[in-house]
Image 1 (spheres, rainbow, N blue to C red):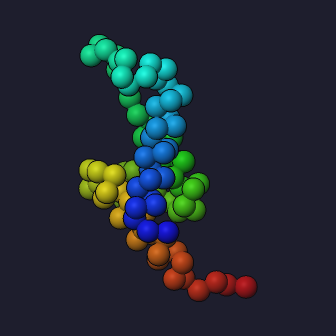
Image 2: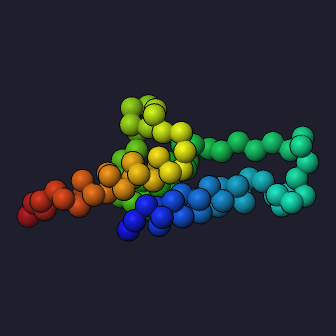
Length: 87
């Protein structure tokens, strides 16, 4: 999996959350409509998808974009994949 695939997965997780919480199509949204992203639910979804641990308080404090998050996930999955398997 590369960064593009990871970014797509992050976007899909965000879109899925938005679809559940915000029933108004974006093209019909009013300026008074609000939406908040549940970061904890998003991170849990990504942890399950990529089989990694994401600690919002320690690991993710410097992440400000989907691009940075995808790079972080890519690095964690690579480190995980490089570890020797124990019988």
